Image (cartoon, rainbow, N blue to C red):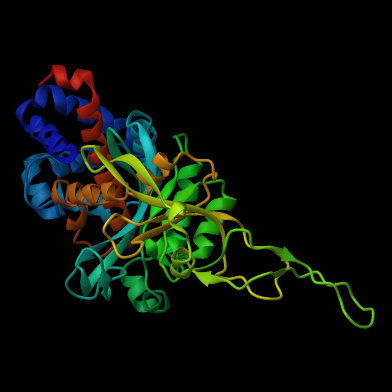
Length: 416
């Protein structure tokens, strides 16, 4: 529904240029002016925004400039997009700080998406698995963070994943203009950086949600917790945990006196989440009702809530006891076994309905990707510049933010 309404906002830009286009120009001057210090950059950025929003099947640079007619110069626009040294992060921040407070924020969503490519020259491209393709294919992978609420979404950041072989290939790096400071980082590491950066901005925080590729990463959960960020992250059934009530104590030394022992030892072995859940009694499962799906339909399912200590990364000899996390597990009626599992650092007394709603809210990022790609050309960038990819994603974010503000604005509704 939101994507359809935003598409109608794009159509109004064509239908009522005297009203909507003026608002777009003012919006562009505001958000782009915070990152660009040259008038020609702001002008080209505003034209690029218009080209992204106006109708057209292809939003790569050549058809975009052609659609703008004599207003845009191809060489100037190409230099602006691929080489001009403006920082895309302030653009994303300016958009996020304007939009996020207005969408009834519920969660931050962390995920990655594929950008299918031909050839080998685009930065980060290789044959790799892409959830977008549903298979291994020649593509780039972009990691992104989004704010999602009852009234819309807004991207909070983008990072292009650079595989290890790209990081080590000086020739390819030079051709793609990849900065020397860029080093190999896993997708979870990129996600943590995006979350920490967004947390420093003037916008409301919310629990961060992510699929198993992120939730299974203990370091990611630890870094988010240290940064003061809450999360509800999917984890696999084979994740090992220490059951509720596991005690950790420093054993007494037997035998001759010596250096005091300082390393705590658990009073039982860790087990997989699947093993732990299989041993629960029926009364540990409770039916929880919550709002679910794009239209907030009433839903209910059976859930268990257990305080556990994840065992991944913990080993005998460590001096610290694993941090407690709340395990949320879903066992839908009719299923043979629990189907989904999440770990969260939200307080154990958090309302079960809220936890169930958050656990099931990640579908919103798929709608976001669909609109960003289908309506605004997120995956249409054809350049081979590292900076160009980040410039393009920042400008697509700005276009997305403008359409969200149009949809929410009473002024925009009066000018239809």
